[in-house]
Length: 220
Image (cartoon, rainbow, N blue to C red; front, side):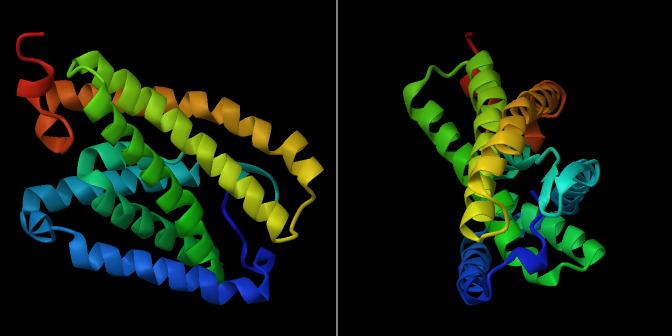
C-alpha cells in the first residue's frame, strides 16, 4: 500500500509526523554509524536499498492508495538488524515519495511499510533465536521464509485498518477486494526473501549481520 496524501485526515498529520520523527531520532541516536564508514559496508547497504527500491517500483493497484508490491523489509532486517533496516526503508520510501510527489504521505508510509514489517521481522528473529535450535534450516525457514510472510501480512492488516479508519474506503470493500491479496503476496515475499537469504548466507555470509557460521553450521 502506497498511501496518497489526500487520503490522510487533516487531524492525523501531526501525530503521524511526530511518530516518524521519533523513529528518525531513535535511528540517529542508537544506530552504529561507524559501520557505514567502511566503504565496503556502505556499498552493500546502498546496493541492498536500491534492490529493495526496484521491488517497490514493480507494483500494481486497484484504486488510489491500494497498491501491491513486494517489501524486502525482512531481508534488510536480517542483513543489517532493525535500525539500519529502518534507515534503508526510510530511504526507499523517501525516493518513492519524491518520485510520486506525495510528500505528506511519507510519515504514514514509513510507519506502515517500514516500522511494521521491520518490527515483526525482528520480533520473529528474536523469538527463534531464543526458542529454536541453532540450525541453518531453522534460520532460513523461520527467519526468512516465515518471517517475511508474517511481516507482509501484518502490513496488509495495518494498511486495511488505516484505509478504513481514515475513511478512505469501506471495511467491507477492503476485506473483499484488498486484504485477501496480501495472503497471496505473502507467498511471493517469503519465497524471494528465503531465496535471497539462502544465497547470501552460502556465498556472502559476512553480508548478513544476524548470521554466524560457527553458530548455525559448525557441527550440524
